Image (cartoon, rainbow, N blue to C red; front, side, top):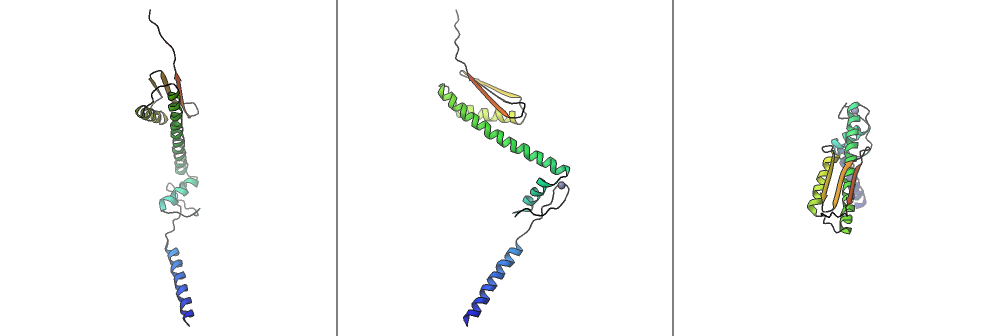
Length: 157
Ligand SMILES: [Zn+2]
């Protein structure tokens, strides 16, 4: 009866789906530095994504440099997040000591701290009121934010 017709219709739909999947573009991970192709390690949305995967596992000089650059970028992200977390601590510290810590001061410390992170400045020292803040990289390339509050008085006689 119409059952046969329905079956045929359903099969047609399945076929269409299958063809759709077969038509989906497949990307072969290709190292952008040496051109070596690798087996796909998953589904890629673009050739660029597939090539990034190849560059992350290839052993040619270009790919090794690529990974070291990526690692530096990752470390920079971690350091920037750490800088912001330390500035949150500093904001609390300032509040406890009744020292103003405005958005512009924070913005300046983020910008200065970023210069230190990028190696464009050796260190940043900033003073306001009785606060002294110093941002530098330690010998393990980790960001260090040191701050102190001076509570001393000077009397002129
Ligand atoms: Zn390669």
